[in-house]
Image (cartoon, rainbow, N blue to C red; front, side, top):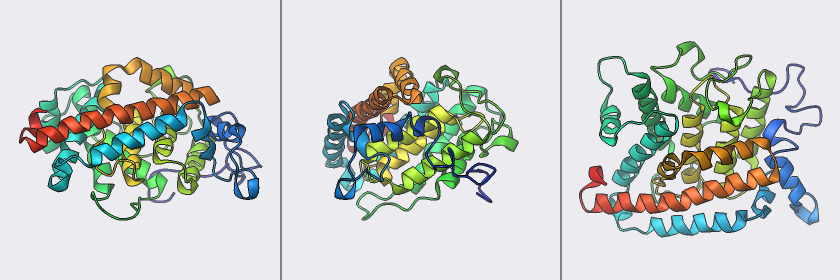
Length: 330
């Protein structure tokens, strides 16, 4: 994609990503979410196969109930009194806490007061590695918040093309601590430096091919917002398209999708602190998704849905604090 710093597309010989038949590779291919959808037997028009690769994920064990629970939790959150006039404050306060927890999941544990200070401007001295990751998480959160629709806006938010979105979030997340030559650029031959516990990541042309497939899937699917965000979140963790900073990017993009697609119009859902408090189940579920099995994909979507339910409770606590005039101390 010229000008974005992200190169996505098909194979060098011009064939469709994933092979001549155009089906995907890796965890979005025959053994992953798209394959799981096909095996679940989603029906399309006139009873034929569904053309939506994510449609049947809702039919996997426990997914429909989990998605519905997340929807109900977000609907209940929406009617909190703080969102009538002070939703921007709640969104900002929740974003700081989400960024703090996202950085903690990457090993950068920083007090909330320090995160707040980073949000108002970095110190003149070069940041430590921990501060750099935390600062990047704050900036990535701020980047996606600028793309979120206002609470009460009608219609689905128009987002940049997927490749541009990823490049922008990655630049926000890694500027200042990663080599500028690789910021916003999809890796090719080099292996990623992060998330090594999720197993080997693809290299070479497969990386760009899978990103292209993911972009097409996001653009065409009509699956519930929770499912779309979970698949994007999980695939970015499994794929690790950049040299470093992949997890912060994945969580920030997922945060944007649940808001822009209408699940959480408040933009204040807070699943990250729950994951940071118990990172092993989160990472285990992500590793399960990376296997591409139906069970692994279903467990990951359920994990994301449970995070949304817990995140609604945490957002409600932030809204309570903002309403009481103590948002910074929630």
